[in-house]
Each structure stands twice: as structure tokens, then as C-alpha cells.
Length: 370
Image (tube, rainbow, N blue to C red):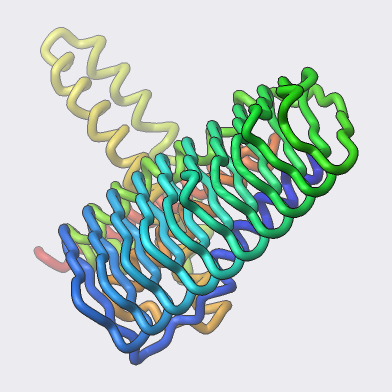
């Protein structure tokens, strides 16, 4: 369990720390972003659908609902989205997160990936090490150094020229698998290892009681919110930024307002629905209440993204960079949410403070329109 937490922490803190925001980089943000040809510097993109099939001389950072990234990237690649498909060549590191990841690429250095489903194709080659975390992981490519996987279901059919460390609920090592180093795995049950699989080193098994079926909660939580966060910011950018700013200027007032709204609204709904003519009004208020909870949490995510950028001295003045910052914040929050007790408390606090900040900002807008 401690090793699993270390993998997740290293992966997602690395996503934030490893990519400096360069003011001269090219950036695009729209509902649909398409990039072709060549880019002589770093390239940032955010949108509902992002399609990058270009030669990029620097790093690529992308966030969105659906990502298609191909051709050749001379620097690093970082991407987060509901669906991420990568083809071609990346000369340096790849760090990606999403609901559904499909990787068919030659990577010059390390790979770090997290997702509900991760597929590493037979054509994929990783020059360095690979860290994979997700619900369902299939590794059919070639890893030139060590491989670490934490997942609910693990299928290993590829080649690893170093050691392999696996943690999962169901682990399968197929006939085509080749491991030049040691295999160490942790699970609730012994792995299914084909006798024909080539394992040069020692095989060790450590029994665990942890239920890996819970591993995907943070991932699903994160990916669902990224698209909603992009939509919220795209439709109401000024309101979103101003609401997040209220958490900074009035954190306790925001928290108190959130608590009042959270408790009072269900009571009002019950009273309305107890009156014959108030049923539909009560149902309408209840629907708005659930929408407000979602918006409040997203506002808190924008706050976390903004604070993280300030701490790391990153520029998020453009729409694309702002969306990227909240995508990273949502990913980090989603994975921290799997920590027992503290994860749930963190989510609840963020929801309350974001809800309160949104209500306070609505009051401010209403008063200044009178």
C-alpha cells in the first residue's frame, strides 16, 4: 500500500513540477483544436477535442475531452483527457492521464501513465523506465529499463529489459512476455504466469489484502470533471476566476456560506415538497442544488490550480494555461481522494468552500446589476 501511494504521488506531482510554462510558447484553446505542420517551440493546447499531428521542436502539453497526438515531438509530452491516443515518436519523457489511454509510440526516455484503461501496443518502445497506474493495464510493448504497474487488472505480454514490480488484483503474465530481470508482485492471490514466459531473474510474491477494485475511483472522478471544468470556464470565464479568487480573499466566509447552503437547501426542498403546489418548485430547487454542488467543486478545483501555479511561479494568464492548470489540479485531487478518511475530508472541504465562494460571487454580481 505504501509503494502504491508513492507511485501515485510521484506520478502526479511529477506532472505538475516537470513542465515549466514558457511565455513564448505557442498555445491554442477552443472547443476543437487542430494542429498540423510544424511548431518551432513548445506547444500548449486545451479544448473539447485536441488533434495534434505535427512536428514540434519543444514540449507538448495538452488537456481536453479527446486527445489525438501523433507525428514527432522533440521534447516532453504531457497530456490529460477523457480519451488519449498517442502515435509516432516522442524523444524525451511522456506523462499522460485519462480515462482511456492508447499508446503506440517510440519514447526516448521515461513513460508515466495513469488511466481507467491503459493499452501499450506491441509497437511501443520506452527508452527508460515506465510507471503505470490504472484500473485495467495491458503492456505489450518494450521497456528498456524497469517497469512498475499498479492496477486492478494487469496483463503483461511484452518485453522488459529490467526488473518488473506489479501490484494488482488480477495479474497475468503471458507466454510472449520476456523479463530480463526480477519479477516481484503483490496481490491478493498468486499471479497467472505462463510456464513459457521468459523470466531471467527471481519471482517473488507478496500477499496483500487491499481491494484493487477501489483503485479506479480517483481516475474516474478526475476524468469526468476535466470536461466539466473546461465547459464551465469556456462559458463563464470571468465568473469562474472571480469565484476562485473569493476563496483566497475570504476563505472562512466561503466555507461558512457553503455549510449554510449545504444544510439549508435540503430543508427548504422538503418543506416545499410537503406542500401540494410546491412539489415541482421543490424538485426544481433540488435539481439546481445538485448543479450548484458540482459548480462549487469545480470552482474549488480552479482555486487549487491557481494556487499551485503561484507556488510554482507558473504563468496561467491565457485560457489554455488556465484550463491546463485546473486539469492538473483535478487529476491530483482525484488521486488524493483514494486516501482513506483524509481523501474524503479533503473532497468535502473543497466542495463546501467552492460552493460558498460561488454563492458569494453570485450575490456580488446581482447587487452590482441593480
